Every structure is written in C-alpha cells, then in structure tokens.
Image (cartoon, rainbow, N blue to C red; front, side, top):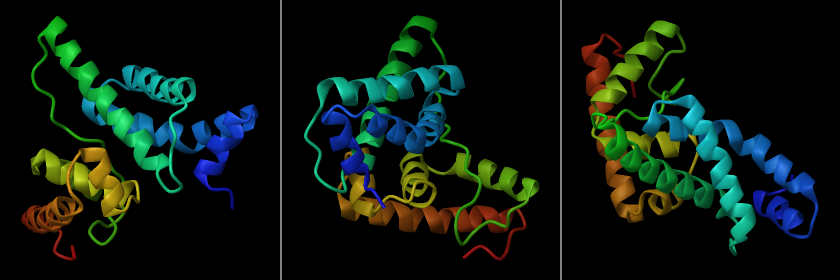
Length: 181
C-alpha cells in the first residue's frame, strides 16, 4: 500500500497521478470537514480545492505520517479565515455546528433516526469536544494528529475526547439510546 507521503513525493517528482490519488482519497472528507464550519457545500468544495492548491504550489516539507494532519490543519485554517471574512461582509450569526457524521464507533446504531439523534446530540457538545471526536473517530486521526490540527497538546485532546464521549453518552441516553459505550 502506498502511503500518502509517497503520493505527495510522486507529485513533487512531476507525476500528476500522485496528486489525483490524494485528491480522490481526501477530497470528499475534507469537503465535509470544511462544510462543518461553513454550512455551504459549494464554498467547502472551493476551499478544499484551495487546500490542495496551496499544498501543491508551496510544496512544504512533510514528514512521513504527517500529510493527513497537514491537510486538515490547512483546511481548518482556511475555513476559519473564510468564515471570519464571510461574517464581516454578510454579518452572519456565529456558526458553531460541526460536520455531520454517520456513526461514532461504539455509540450509535446505524439507522437514520439514530443518526439524527447523534447529530442533535453532537450539536450540544462544546465545539472543541465535537471537533476532537470528529477528527479521532470519523477521520481516524491519532490524538497527536488531532492535536496538531486543533493547535492543542496531545493531553488536551485526550481530555477532550474523554469528556466529549462522556457528555455525548449522557446526551444519547437522554434521547433513549442506552447502549452507548
């Protein structure tokens, strides 16, 4: 299996297939992540392309195992920057909802109704808890990678995930989902 960084190096050597493979792998997940900040899928798609444009024009040095975190960190930065500019121009209310998720590993039975309950409960979590859970469970990032994306320490991410899961479990139980672990 080719690792992400090898695809990136492949692109840097002039082979466009590396770029295409990375965009296929991360395009949709990054768009969903950005859309959690912007709530406008078309703007999210534009920013996802901007994330890749930045990566491939600036050509930063990325260590093995760091590309995914780099992409999400850049996406977060661009989404927050875009959101703050957007708010200034259009006076939008503060939007704190995070990306929609399909399942949270130990906690949700895969039905539409339960997904809606999860979405409602996730909305009630503190923003940092919600983002830490999203990055670690939905995106499969390590605590170290999530810490890099969020600009926090690994210990802070550990605490946010622990507290977020505990709070989410309580919210899900309040909604009648009693088998949340």
